Length: 239
Image 1 (cartoon, rainbow, N blue to C red):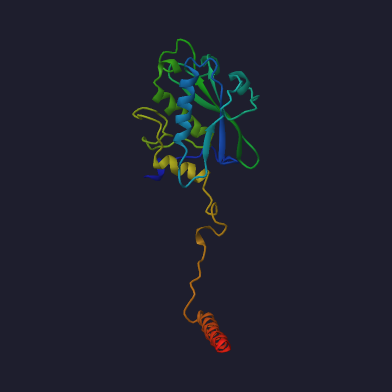
Image 2 (image 1 turned 90 degrees about the vertical axis):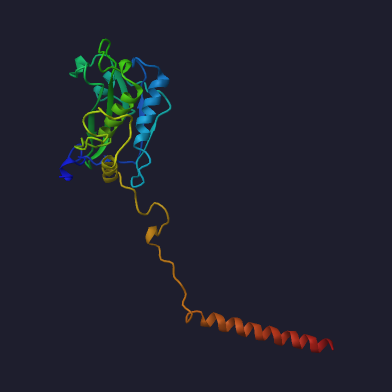
């Protein structure tokens, strides 16, 4: 069924970050590609999740480069989470460097289920010719990042092959979210119905009926008669 293929939560108690404004920090050190190239794919990945009309979520990149190392992040010492770092020893972290371009890890939540810590580790291991950043196209990196960002936001895998949160990045030309991805981010980061007018979309605009207008019309008529009387008196006084 369709429901069987839909998006999933990353965990039963994960409610997402407490704020809809989430800023990702990036450490470009040891990534194997230029800072400009890295920032470009990060921005593309973040923007893929922005603009969902039914969600309050807005992602951005911290313009100041992070100094958090991969080791610091993995040891839960990062002070600028969520953070994106590059790892030159994927093997040492238990990840296959020939098949895994990156992964989200170390997600922590508070008692309310809000995410307080998470990050993404990108493959920069030398010699990992199939999956390190140097050997991936910019589209492949941005798709990978967008997928892992989804996990860092609290979204699990989807059974819809076209979805960004499907487990494989194959057959995806770029980081573009689908309706299934939109449903996921809307469920976790719903847009408030009262974000505009204090009365929301249910504001009532009262239309005055002709009967209710009678007192106003009577007052205007009386004013007009009085004005005519005054004019006549003044005219008689001058003659």
